[in-house]
Amino acid sequence: MAKQKFPDFSHEKELWASGVELVAGLDEAGRGALAGPVFAASIIFPKDVKLAFKVNDSKKLTPQKREELAPLITGRALAWSVGSAEVWEIEELGINGASELAMQKAFEGMGLDPHKVLIDYFKVSFLSAKKQIPIKFGDTLSSTIAAASILAKVFRDRHMVKLSESHPRYGFDSHKGYATELHREMLIKHGPCEVHRDSFLSKIV
Image 1 (cartoon, rainbow, N blue to C red):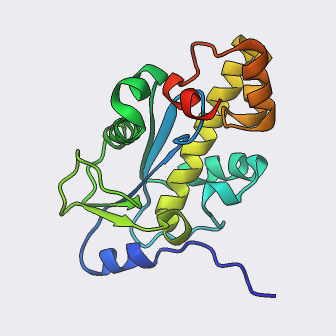
Image 2 (image 1 turned 45 degrees about the vertical axis):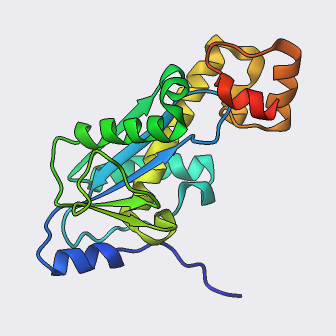
């Protein structure tokens, strides 16, 4: 049986070795959901950090494991921040624009200006081309991006649990706004509410 491969600091080590001190990771959560905001997280670990725990792409971890890792991650970070874009911003800007807005809020919220930013898959307009390094499948390769993905997912999931308290009929605490069978059934039964993304529903429901 093949040994599971986890993200590591290979990309970060190359940058640190070249004289780059501050390397950030940036990722988002909730792009494909039918309801709720999109969240993003940005994080900087100390140069040559060694973690006593393994991180991974948030989608490969259970909710319990993500919750366990979140305080460990923030406890080792030099700086970190989470940002979000609301449903009305998703409708106004589109999911790509809203995801970038959430990333920008997270990036600016750190209070530190990193020299390089590792991003999962795509480039963002609020950073110069020289400053950002998009990495395909970055949350499975870079520990810093993976850590950001975990924080984004944890904070978004917590937000969706809160939304389930004010909108109990939809089951947001279980499916977190994604297009599960339960969610579709509740949409057919009750119709959408103000936290649903109308532009997404028109394509799916």
